[in-house]
Length: 502
Ligand code: B12
Ligand code: SF4
Image (cartoon, rainbow, N blue to C red; front, side):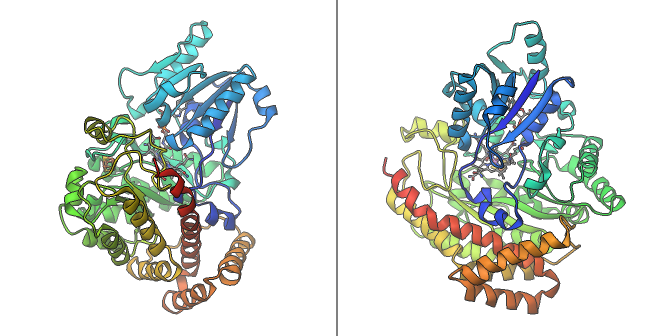
């Protein structure tokens, strides 16, 4: 069986990092781990080909070659998925789809032959058996969420390593909290399931074997969801890293209560975690309460961020505006918080009601749902009637982005971050000297010569050089990420004016 695994295109969002990746000569931040995992569940004899539309086009030759097409998507990729399904069906191919979008919105793609709802560790082998008997079903959904012991080592070798800036692995699924807007707990459950230490090390060994060095994203929604297991993993990971001469540094996502556990923070530092993404959402307590985000209300949020940063973890964070309890001065308060927290990459979004979430159900009860979410909470569109005037909310939201990503403000935050986050160990080298020089020259040309904010860039670099000479590469990387966010912010006003009118 010739199997074509296709990953749809993302629109440009803050998470695409596209403007920054271009400097490194990369096309996408991460490979599609869901499809790499699905591939590993298929019979060994099946031939496989991966086409990630974020790094290469889907050609007619690929489609003609295939007997069966597997595609995965998030909500934000639905348009691209629809086109993939249409064209593959037009060529008479058997099309199988799955992933978060399909799990929460299967009815939208009637043309697909087989739909997988939820996790597929047990259902893909069942599908293969049914197919061999000529009895494949249209819909597959496991009766219960699988233990992660059933998850094989993903077929990492299918990904073209040269095109991605990081590789991904997954340690756990699910999160014990109950944030109202979150679909994770609906899709993956509230009891975090983890892989064993041996499974994790085997995945890292596989990455080393195929030649990967550099950043690895542990894609868990909440890496510390099962603290007991994570605490057992971290020393093993630190030891593995030491034995392999530290080939990777790690980035992950965690809940803010990480700040309460110094042993955990120390363990992460020793295991070479460098970045952690936190769901901070808002400094307004009434809005946190509305979002059922009690874990963010146990202490001072700014102190929590500072504590995490003091363990050499650079904090990235998500912020949301649009809660019913947001006061009139919410925009200024978010800006102030982001400024004081020294978080360069502050991903600010408008509240969105994702299908099947508690928020979705409440808004439906209150008659406030408008349409399906675009899945992209940064495009300025709203899929519900907010308490604040819509135009004011969208304009205020954009004013946050314009402020925090204005060059002066961003460079100041980046310097502040370098001060707050002590260096624990050097970053592993991802590429050779020639490639580093190339990246640096592209950044200097774009930010220091062509950019209208070049004066601010040179002032920033001068200060970074005097105060943090040994961290020049990090300072330059931060500048490139800020440039990406500014470029996107500049384009934002245009698209959102269209979309919030409804
Ligand atoms: C890594 C990640 C990303 C990466 C994507 C990298 C990549 N190339 O895949 C980055 C950081 C870029 C990203 C960005 C975004 N993401 Co994201 N992301 C994740 C995360 C944390 C892990 C995904 C992953 O690799 N999982 C590991 C694999 C093994 O799990 P899986 O994909 O679910 O696959 C299993 C099943 O779903 C199923 N399956 C999956 N695909 C298929 C296909 C077939 C054919 C079959 C049979 C089965 C199947 O089988 C697998 C094994 O069980 C998930 C959360 C999560 N827990 O999955 C959110 C998640 C997918 N992201 C989400 C969102 C909203 C976004 C953003 C839109 C956020 C934003 N507001 O900007 C952006 C959009 C991207 C963009 N550039 O525009 C939502 C999606 C919600 C939805 N219903 O669509 C999720 C669920 C998290 C959340 N609730 O916020 N994301
Ligand atoms: S902490 Fe994050 S993953 Fe957990 S329920 Fe809240 S939003 Fe979802």
